[in-house]
Structures are given as C-alpha cells and as structure tokens.
Length: 262
Image 1 (cartoon, rainbow, N blue to C red):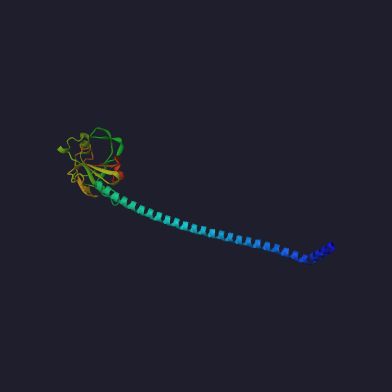
Image 2 (cartoon, rainbow, N blue to C red):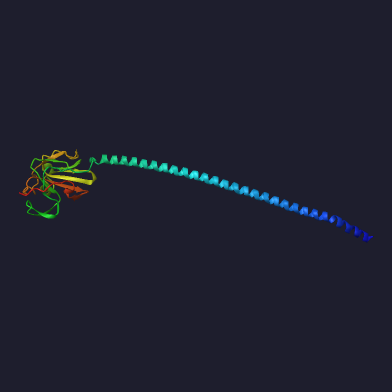
C-alpha cells in the first residue's frame, strides 16, 4: 500500500509540478515588479524634491539679487544726495567766508594792470645794489616806475585797502625806517593771498577797509620817500608785491619797459 501511495504522489508531482514552478516564478516576478515600481516611485519623488529645491533656491537667489539691486540703488541715490548737499554746504561756507574776509572781491580774470604810466627805473633785486640816498648797497624787494609827480596811481587789481600810511601826527610812532623807505603808501589785499604796496605817494584818495576795483585811483606820485628822494631818476612809484607774506618780483604781475638813459 505504501508503494501505491508513493506512486500516486510521484504521479501528482509529475502532473502538477509544472504549475507549481510556474506559480512560484510568477510570484517572484510579481515581487520583483513590485519592488521595481516602488523604487521608481521613490526615485521620481526624489527627483521632484530636488527639482522643487532647485526652483526654491533659484527663487531665493532672484529675490536676493533684487534686494541687492534695491540696496545699491538706494546707496547710489543717498550718495548723490550727500554729494549734492555737501556741494551746497561748501557753497554756503564759501559764501560766508567771503563775507567774513572784508573785503576782498573776486576778480574776473586775475590779471594785473600797470598801476601807473611810466618806465622801469629800478628792478627787483635780492642782490644788494647801491642806493645814493643811503650811500650803500641794499636789497630792493620792489620796482621803481619813473613818472612825473602828480601822475595818478591806480589799483593794479580789485581788492580791499588793508593799510594806509601818511606821515602825520597820527602815525608819528611808526618805525622811522619804514617811512624813510616808503614814504606815504597804500596796501591793497587781493585774492589768493596777494598784497600790493604803492609807495612814495601824495594825495592818497582811499581809506582803510575801502573796496576798490581794478583801475581805481588811490593817490598820486609824490616825493615822500626820504631814502630814494635823491635818486637820479627823480619822481617815481615804488611798487611791491607780496604773496602769503613773501616778497615777489612785481614784473611777474605787471610789465614795464626800462627807462632810456640820457
């Protein structure tokens, strides 16, 4: 009987074994397909997440760029406004400083005109030259312009009268050598630290702190300089120029031809 049972089992497996194997294979295929589908879904979700993250990063970058542009534009506007305000403030300060200084008017071209019609009798010299009135050689930080007594002397450039000296009781305490060298004189302060001195005058027609224009009369040539009164060229204007307190050669500012020797 056992043999019959074994034979039946063997026949069953022979007949049904194909279907069993087929079923197992189908199960394996189904499992593999399920895993593949799941992996595909996971991969797709990851790709979507990556794409979404990239899109969000791009959006954040664009927003950041817009903010940066806005900040830069605001800085540009603020800087332009600050520059404009500074320029306006500087203009106001310059205007106030101009009011405080008394007095020195701005010139249109900065050029000087000859203060008197005449010829050059003595030049500017840092090397001592002989002076008859002193009977010795001295330096001469001015020029002498030969002209007739009574000739009108004019301001070489517009400015403000900052000093007037006349030999009178009011100025009796002035250093004696200053009057001897220059006589009656006028000093005018111009722009850029330039000062002009007109000496050996008579009939001075301006006062201290008075504003003058280029070519305005300030006095007439006289014979008030004691030191140079005996010079052979006679009556003259002693004209000196200073810049920031330093003596300058007046011929850098005005032009005269040398006097003809007789």
